[in-house]
Length: 126
Length: 494
Image: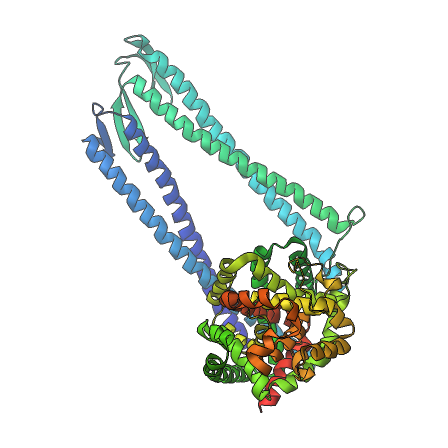
């Protein structure tokens, strides 16, 4: 009895840990996205500070590639859009994961109780 | 006790941990702040340099060559800069433009710094609070635990509200509040009734009652149209009104069997609940007699109705209805039993006047200001409550009405009004028109009569609402009463 429960507990615990890992992973990804968002926002704002005379380059690999300023602006806007979308996606993902982890935690708690009871009973009997 | 011991033993470690976390956050914030400060300084020096850079066409500089060596060089194109905007975007711009960019970034850095400062401060505060908490938990010398046991919150509030009604004569707000409370209390009521019946049973029963009422209504409508001018009005009115009218008839004609048992109970309850209520409210209204409270409460709504005028009343009722859901409605059906009595009596604002007159003086003389709440002490209501039965009888005699005492009391729920109502009700049944006009209130027949017809419609909704309110509010306060009523009704029915 106790063994079975322990096995179950073990597997449940592993699942729970996996979820925790996922959560922290997506959390850091989200943070990275957040940083990119602010960075791109700054770029966008600074593009607005420039005028058409300024030449804009994009660093691709080791070279600076000349870009059309308007095009660059559009690119940045698109990138911002994408980042926002990603952030939203991660947010839902995180929520989902958290809900799952909550479930797992509950089952873990109940399992633990069961396990303790199962362990305690024999001892008491003996 | 055990909990306390556990608490005190657990607290220190938990506190330490919490404090540790707080400290960590603060430290983190500090390092970040210093980080951003460095940025800020860099940008400031950069800006300074940018401002002087274009001053000359070329500079002699030492160019860093790897990490170890420098070599002499010359800086030319002093007004041409390539700026990294971020995310690998570069732009070529003049020194002046670069300065604006730097300014922009400094702004960003500043906001970042402000945020960090805020975070740090909040966590420092929290740490301080934790410290206090710890001290509080460990040595309770300086701290006293103040606790207030709030069990009868609803009841108490109720009492207050009632008082407010009287004194302020600000019906609207209070109504709203009461409505909300009502809902709550309804819930509680449900719980209470569950004890007696299962909820389903209860609903079934309520449905039944409702149906019955409707039937009665139908009959009433037909009857009333023929007989009474007044009744006609009511019938033409909203359904609710009709309901009320029907109910009245029932009492008069058929003397519905349901009512009889209920009335008995209510009689019994009538006294008891009053006592309870008094106890509850005693603190607030010491001067008032127990019964007085009851009465005043009932009366209030009527007054309110008069005061507010049609619009207000209607509004309330509408809102009520909206709020009320099926459940509510069902309940109302039940409630209508009570309401009916009241309705009869108070169909018109004029009716209210009459009632007051009768009750207060025991004479037909009308009161000038019904609206004032002074009624409690002086009013008939109080009288009734004190020497309830005797007064009742007297009044009844006055009315010349043979109606059974039970019916009158039946409205147990309550209030003086109810009791008063019952006489009014009796009037209707007896001689519908005639009886009514010739009633106790003979002295002010004209005024009362005239308004009667005109104002009837608005009054009804209000009453209904009030009823509901009453039911909702009173039930929680005096659960036994409520239960008994339902029970009684059910028993009767079965």
